[in-house]
Amino acid sequence: MPPEQLPKINVSDLILKAATDMKDTLPDSYTAFVLSLFCGMRRAEIDFLTWDQVDLTDGHIWIRRTEHFTPKAKNSDSRIDLTKEVVDWLESYKKLTDEKIFVLPGGNPLYPPRCKMVFRHLLKWLRSNGVDYVQALHALRKEAGSLMFAQTESIDLTAEFLRNDARVALEHYVGRKGRLELSIH
Image 1 (tube, helix red, strand yellow):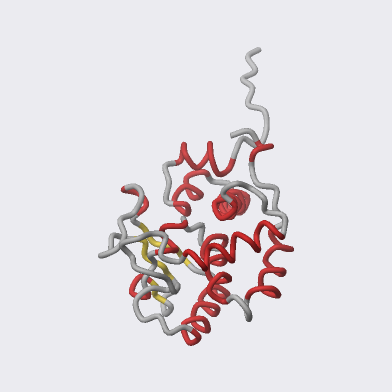
Image 2 (cartoon, one colour):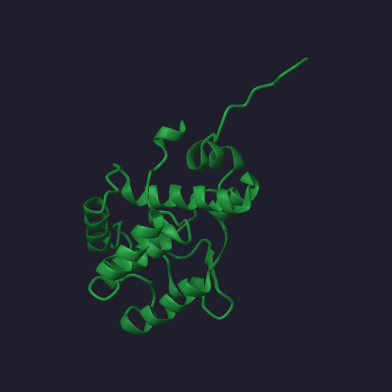
């Protein structure tokens, strides 16, 4: 994917605005935002995430097959390491919610997406804040991949973070950063 097609999001500003706008008034949508951007999670992974998959003690989310969800690919079955800020938010969010099985409230798991209203509010908020991509939620995942690559300088680690093949991560989430020329003298 050419760099001009990668999301151009000011992540720092977006995070601050999300906390200000959604943390207290739309905590479910804020949680979906956090899971997408900070954890690089796919929409379906967020939609069907159960509290049993969340280990707040050790700071992990386990993406795995459950009664209601099958990961997208074999290498999607993995562990997501959480920052202290994400753990702190999920601990406080868990106290706010009545949900006992799923992290986010929603409808019948047989009719996805379960969390239609949560995603609807988040997508409306994202678009009103300059994330005007067709797949605005996926743009957060792409941005997470780009940020992980900038942090680690490793496409393999970025692919592992995104639970993708390295070629897919490079093509769709990181993009080529410059010219690749072979100079033979």
